[in-house]
Length: 335
Image (cartoon, rainbow, N blue to C red; front, top):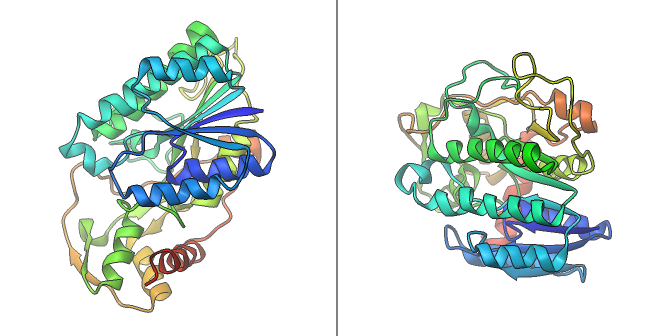
């Protein structure tokens, strides 16, 4: 089949592209290669995917309506995996306007492309951040997500609403995946593991928020990508018996589904840091700080629906995953 992967120079997108090429699919990868973080890392990820002749990269900003429309019209994709977004909860506190073009307009151009060219399945990235003020754990897709606490989270909730509209009005099959704290080799420099590793090796302090009293459902990159590739084969169909009053918000009378994708077993932040210290062989200098705006105390995924649909289970435990990241980091940066 022919796939479009948006955010193809990104952490998850580049790995999805590699594996789909290995399976014999043709991949068109797009990315705007913005400088939110190190563009050299993005190019290095792309180089991995470009080892396959089945991968073609196109530099394109999804806010370019005409450009995206032309892309869809020319290639007639079978399926779309939409992972491009302006990421980061904390960045959205100080730079809210950065999220409008990427996460709202960019998603709308993709939806329009899917509608106009009759794409068979759109899988897109949502986020665990949509759970916002929800304190009930584990987080379930049957829970309300009407109280986000960052603009990033609000933009991801908006994506789910926009997808449902297109599924309902135009019959576009859409599946949203709420990712839970993805980490591993080739990860983003703005995320904790990357920042901690860089600082510890340099002998600098690491900022530990909420005095380290936090839980995260850390999910290894290979587990995430396996789930993405499994679910894109499960194309949602309308459920004629579904009703708003009694049905789960994760499904619909339209061809629409939302799933959690995470490890399903939260880890204490201090245990995560200890695993990193063990892998590095260096004790971290810690600067304990209060909770940051937009952060939540705990994330914890209920992945039963995804398991029922695909058989998905996470395989990689934190100590193993952190060591794999450290090994990659030392090799990539020669430190």
